[in-house]
Length: 90
Image: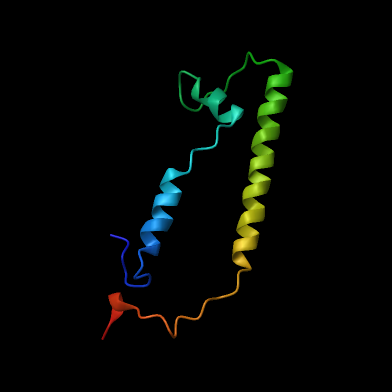
């Protein structure tokens, strides 16, 4: 499915396996939202400190995701002139 000929050594499969193996991040805020019986409702009987911790985790995670996205957007392009693209041969 992912083999386009760009990585004859199986690089795409290796990347896919790494991404699949990554454990989901356990955020308190997400766990609290999942405990709500009806989607769209928010827990209302939480101690203030628990809510502060949950919001802080989500804000921190959002900031880290934004920083990673910013770094990825500034990566230098990779020349494909010497790489055979077998999936799009003429």
